[in-house]
Length: 274
Image (tube, rainbow, N blue to C red):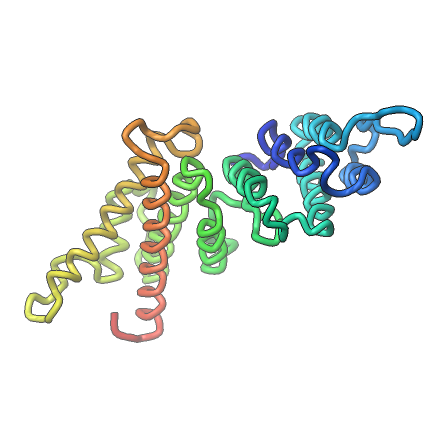
């Protein structure tokens, strides 16, 4: 995933909020550009007698510069988003389509746009430094960012992989070096007692419980297969046979599986019945 939230797509999506003179003022844009250290690349000068570039064009131009200056890009995005929040742009129903487009564009480069219009990092989860809190944070972000199914599939795989590793290590089992996907599923399901053989046939509902665990396993396998073929990092388009609404369904199911695994792990660790 990119550390730079600004590219051609996100720049154009940000600029759309200023179409036709809408959005924050020229002055607020100037302050945002300056705070990001990019003011010198902005040619706008206020002159009542001269027609200067529109606000939309200014944003597009400065974002092109920020594409090549990742150290400044996050500050630029934050500055523009700050101005949009103060303007109330994220609370205006008329901007719903533009907000969805912007959220999708940011998600595709590894960033999450919250409902309030704040930018947060998506992507690889560092369990060593973030632990369970990092998992919960990424889980919440993935729930909010499924407008771009191809990108969301990539994030769903990374989340599920991190959850499985967390369960394995957290339950006291050393994590094998470079474990393959099937091994992660087997070991994490074994730790959580999700393996079908442990479901007692004499217990009412045993058949249904087995089906639930099999469904969870199928979701994890499917997310991995789809991610390997068409998720983030493997092209933007979805497989020909996979409709967008189906991809969104798969991502939502991945979120549900991650929640099931983590809540079961929590109950185990607290000494409760699984």
